[in-house]
Length: 355
Image (cartoon, rainbow, N blue to C red):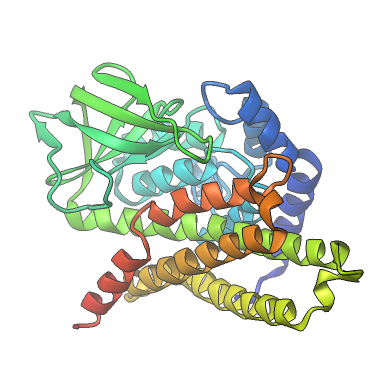
């Protein structure tokens, strides 16, 4: 478990309080019913930006706070607990690409607007149902990018794209040469197919750089998954303490106690792996790719288990719309596949270690 400094502790507690008071799961229900084009509440996003969270990995020189990836992970963990819908994860991942590989003009043009929440940016990488950074069909000719990206988070509202092509990563404004088609997914969040037709593109880096940015996006996703797993555990534990069967609270049955004890140990292991990956990015460690794959494999397996047990221990009512459990399992399945599932990252981890 990461040792937090005073600033990180205050940040975590501040976001947790905001999420519980201003963005509980009921706010997600309200957004889902309203079906805004963005698939998030723009007013809530503006508030997060005013709190300085949109620029958390952007240096102070460009309007951000420069708190780093562990701090970003703490924020996303707290938002993930309540399934708070926001473009923070996608925009932060795209901003990291500009920070690391953008020209001075690109940094000056885009980073302050991302930090203020004015611009929503996102990564566009995958071209099919299976995650892949290599073998992409997207091409850039004479500074113009052409290709199709199948599942782009926040693609409905993004005004800036960081796009992976066959020869590297490119910065593409979301106007001329860009068309969008909304894809309806189980989690009721924004996912779109984006088509680029000779869109103006600025090169950020080669294919190796693309993977470095995707690793950061993967670690960020793991942080949201950690928050979801934590809340799923506590919601289920609280339910067992109040639901009665055969005249007794379910929490008194030893078999269920054993299941909850196993879930708790898995949750703590997940926390160590996820925070370890975020710390590896902040420290610039040479093994951050291994740390990220380890974290994603463990996070995917653990959240899968936690969400399934949440449904089972609630019983049949867990899948009804009256309870929140179904929302967690739907979002979990989307995040498990994003940036590679557990099997993908176990294989990658083995390959990185020479097996």
